[in-house]
Length: 375
Image (cartoon, rainbow, N blue to C red):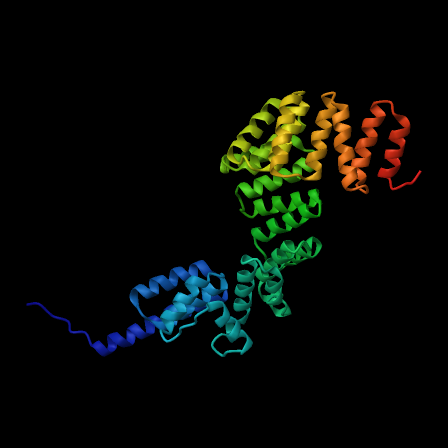
């Protein structure tokens, strides 16, 4: 004889509702802890058992909003409320924040951070900063200070950016914030301090070609060239087609006197990006260091086809001088000074050239002009 168990459907529904509450409680707990990845995983599992549950979609929308992922956020909010039809999600969020909307006020900090990320990514760091002004954001969201620092970096306000990153790191920021603090230090030419931040970011698990490249940059300017070259080589292993890393490695090899390796790296970098004037300029200078002046002059000419920056013009003139074409080099300086008589760096180069020719009186006059003197 078989016993058939008949389940009470009302009891089953009651258990199901309880299960949904447990899912939501767990999701909200993870959300409060800012464990966003775990919260999303849990939401996806819950939706597999309880599809079309508005509360689950709403919680997912909150998490994605906090991460600044507007497309996913609006999709989940619309699943939570099909009547929601914002034509522009960013404008809609701004309206909700300005109106102190009850449905979003608990997520006000997340919304403000998300809006600031949006405007930073769309090239408006000034507007992004406006959303980061409430002091409670900086206490509750270390990420808000990180975004503020990135905005300040974009605006060239490097000291303030560094301060924002440092405070964010002190109140619990992750390895990315330490990395950003290092970038701010590089902008301020504080290479030793930058190196410490990059090393701390590594200790917290951050890796990648950008980190190794910037660490190498710090070491290069601290004249720790062997370590710098190793960092660049490691970065190149991670990003073998990155012409910036190749160029940095080339410059490091050149400074170590490894000119053949440096020239090979420059050639490969230029093959990857033939329209970068800085690469061409550095390649030309390396050829000069190797005594290959005719090839260097060709590269200087190609550089000036791409960019007529003053430093590139002067480097070409120096190449002419070293080739023995002193009259032609002097003509370059005179032409530059005719266009801009107050260019002190050009007066200084002209003074060096004239001094080498034994034209002491003319050289002294040029030197005085370079120093801003009249006699």
